[in-house]
Length: 249
Image (cartoon, rainbow, N blue to C red; front, side, top):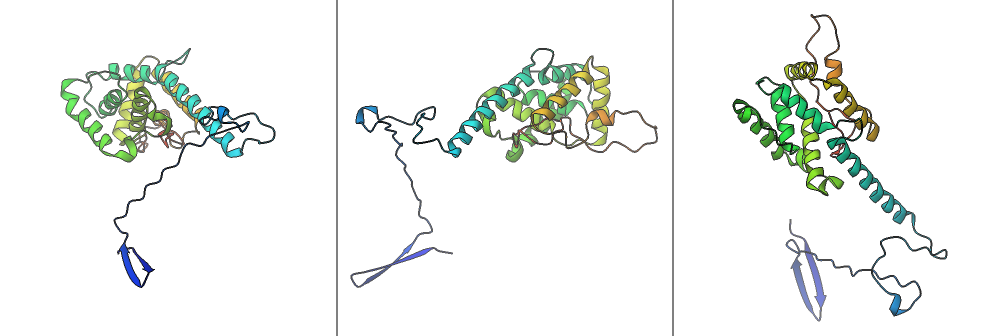
């Protein structure tokens, strides 16, 4: 439906169709002049000015706090990926799992090697597995709502890679893949310790896990119990992704 604007002037009546109108808004940079002299004028300051007669607004303080939080979480995300201190890191866990699954063509291998590719870990799967891994990666990247980095994850290529890696690992898996991944962690030296550490860190940075983990799928029980429900590899109550595409399986 057309958007019309009607103008009456000097005996004329003009109708304008605004459907194709494009608005352009330009806001000049605000200039702060604390002493009221042209010599002190300049662009916005990187920090709020200390002026008791003109206190800083709560909105400005909240913006500064948000910038600090984003920087802190970005640094924590890089450290979680690369490892720091006694924490081996998510990249090390994925490399170990990839080594365990190097000759495996089962349902656990595709998501692990796909996550390695998205995380820029430069680990190639067995040639026979390449088509399956490529299919997982391509399907994920086609879904922009899942794969597009948000917020501070757009700052650097390393943060973008960590976002996509973790977002893929937040996807749900069929029961057979859950069981196969749990068995792969059994065969990986220190696998469960690293996996549990990743989930604890993510839970403290964001929220406790919203779904069951692979640890629960590996819990001992009667052989007649039903197959494990679908789970993600990384589980978290919030995402980085939403982040913060953030959180991990």
